[in-house]
Amino acid sequence: MAEKGTGQGCVFFNKQRKRWNAQYKEYDAKTGTTKPKTKSFKTEEEAKKYLDTIMYQKENPLYIEHNGIPLCEVMKANLKLKLDTNQITPTQFGRVTRTIEKIEKTPIGSKNIDEITSNELQDYMNSQTHLSNSSINKIYQQFNQTFKIAINKGYMLRNPMINVIKPKSVKQDKEVRALTVEEQQSFTDYLLSKDLKQCKYKNVFLIQMYMGLRCGETLALTTHDIDLKHKKMNTHRTLTTDENNAIIMGNKTKTYAGKRVIPIPDFIYPHIIEQMQIAENQENNEEKLLFKPYNARYTRRTNVNSELQRILERYFDITDISTHSLRHTFGTRCIESGMAPVVVQRLMGHKDISVTLNTYTSVFDEFKAREIDKVNQYYLNENMIKNNLLNEENSIENER
Image 1 (cartoon, rainbow, N blue to C red):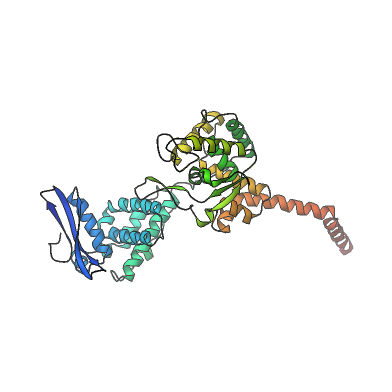
Image 2 (image 1 turned 30 degrees about the vertical axis):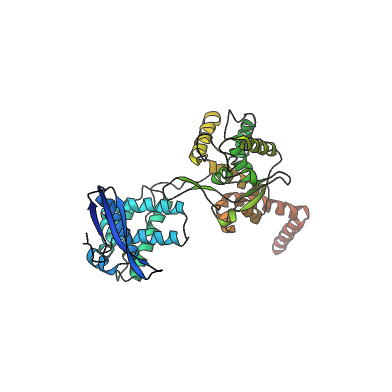
């Protein structure tokens, strides 16, 4: 590691505090001078990693010249820039950070970026086929972005990713299915027959299944989001996680289109009132959350999902449904009822109509087939097809 005073930063052991220090200089725009900055760590490795990240973020030429440019440090610097410029959320930052940390533990992750070959990248990608296609795609994109940055910054002349083929997963893509009409009716009857002591998340399930909210959006609801007079619900936030995977209240929904107002179905109305009364009288619930646990600040989505799966498997022998499936069920029923795609988009909070069309392709196909049958029946009723068929038969007979 660099010595003090070289401008490259340094790592040293503080005997008095028995901690490892990472020290570097930072420019102060107010005074026009540089000031030394120090951060302490329990281990030398942690201090070195921190200093590496700082130096590559600042693009310290002297440091880079002496140490090279590790692949994962370019990834981290790019990720940090995205977070600082609000291109990604803390949740995404934490998720990608964990991916980078996994790459860092492999032989390719410890190499300097200009030393990595196409064959090494291909071998690494091929070793990830046990992951889902979605995960493989994210890793592939991460490599692509990193090497493009390295080329743009002049770290290397040739992009080794050009010759790398993205492999396919050995896993089959998981499809989120909706409950059938019969399954939905049976599950609804079950929920309505239980009180909150018997099924504490029953109103979460009902809101998702009949209003199409995401689980995080439902758990973020407060009494202030309910307009009882007009029987409407305002969705504008979601429970999410920070870079350390801790649950936090997000200040917005998953997408900008997620901020929406949804009508409350009449049969759910009394259950909403019930939940509001609980929230108003609950201790340590300053936010007035509709679904606040007694022993924690926020409800974990994983707990809700586990409870749903336990009920469905035990009482209905259903094993392939999640909380997201309940939202999917609402979208499916909307389409089956003949609702226009653009209205489904608004209710579901999809940012683009293509998301709605792509998500419900099979449902739309079935709906289109039924609607075409209606048109054909109309033609028959108006004798349009019948007359055409007679004309064709007469034409054939005349030719004979």
